[in-house]
Length: 161
Image (tube, rainbow, N blue to C red; front, side, top):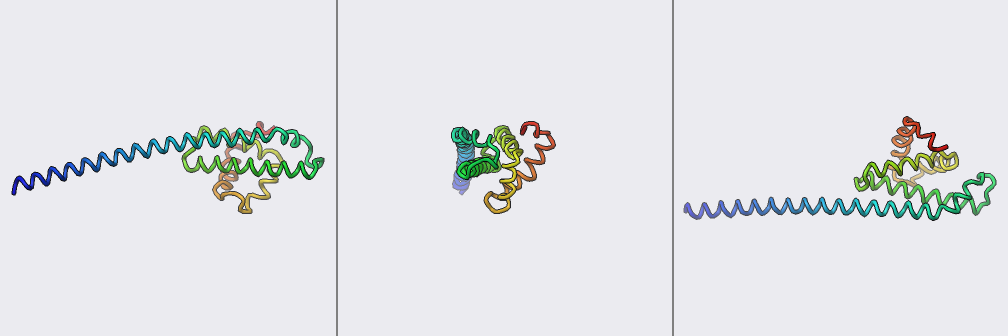
């Protein structure tokens, strides 16, 4: 009976060790997966920014025209471009909020958004849409209560000039 009891204890200890090793393996796999997702997120965000800049060439010329002097087609292009840009910023915030975009990287994008919102036309566009459900409530809260407040306290307004 004593031999049977020792065998059972050895099997129990072996099972426990196997479970611990399995949990360590799962933990390592999760860490590697998280790192891969973060790297993929950075690539996606960079692609969005690159596409935004490539599409913006003509729009930079249009934006230099006072809004009152633009044609309806030019106004539509600017509005569409701004919607796409804000969606891109919202996507960046979403990844940052979920921990998939490092704060140091996101901070640069946030500063760019702050500069964009320093433009009267774009600020008016944002103010007209922020409460209409176009954007994630968390993103709206971030822009209004974190980004603008923080950037104003750091005097980032000089960058918007």
